[in-house]
Length: 252
Image 1: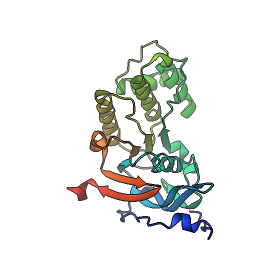
Image 2: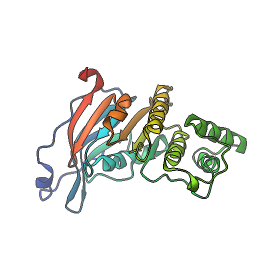
Image 3: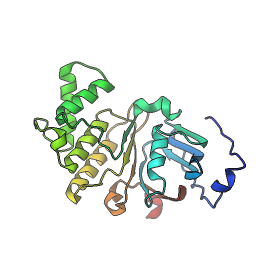
Image 4: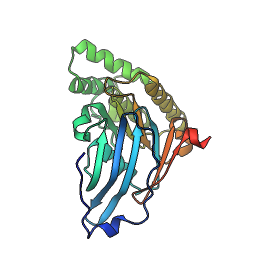
């Protein structure tokens, strides 16, 4: 993993009482960060974050707005590079593991003018080209698994926010990732829809992993109680720092 040296002029911005994460059992880590910091000019978005998550982890990431949750997900996904420190995802640099990572952010990344089936068939073909009949079957199954009707001809642009969220989840699960990153997946969902999504994610976690790694989930949310069924590990960030890391077994 590449190492970076912290410039003496920047160090005072970083060393302000960050809390080191407790050690975790090392079983081919899904994610490993060593003193990762990310600066935008003089604003510190992440501050000396060290963290090891074993493959198969299910992590709920908490924190106030601006705590660094979304930034941390983007760094893990390879969508942003740390200013200092090192990161390994599934045993390699994030950019080399993108095929095995799925990221669902605030934007649905769906085409409003297409139906859900048309969207998923298109994305399935981009990720793993196959015969039209195979792509159709994959898309149909993915939509049924999030309780959407594949035969619905409506354009996604006409969907409710909840239906869009479920379609977006179907899109990322369709890629069969080893590491699934979800940024506020329950936002704009009613409780019933959110609980249905949680059940689907539990089913996804329970399925066998890929040839690369057991399935690992990391999601951010402001709804800690709602996400509790997925919280084998709960991590809290504050002002870009790791504040706490609690494992469900230890909390009992």
